[in-house]
Image (tube, rainbow, N blue to C red; front, side, top):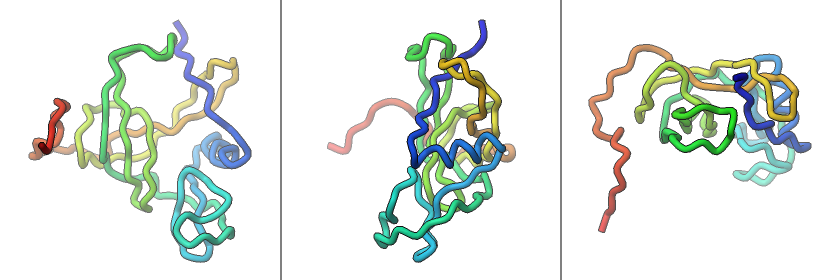
Length: 151
């Protein structure tokens, strides 16, 4: 069975992001007034309110700040289980994607990995995934996925 992925949202603001991903470039909007990267793209900077921005390259590196493993299938052609991570990029914004080639762990250093895929609307394209940057050994207990309470 060919793995089909959900077609990415490509509204007027997101289209530029996906055009860069198609070229295997990771770029985000950056405010030219306060130099803050932002994602998702927006018509104005959420920090200073200015509308001036350009699409600047990212290093493609960051670290995992949150993760989950999906055991239930929400997309019929995407086999489970799969790990989804929230990555804080070196430039600051959080990006979400699948983790390839490792078990998720808080603090895991990762780098962008562009994957060619087929979407459920029968188009093909690229998506940004994440892979470990280097061997990583966590001494933290933050990797437990049991619910907890501060009460």
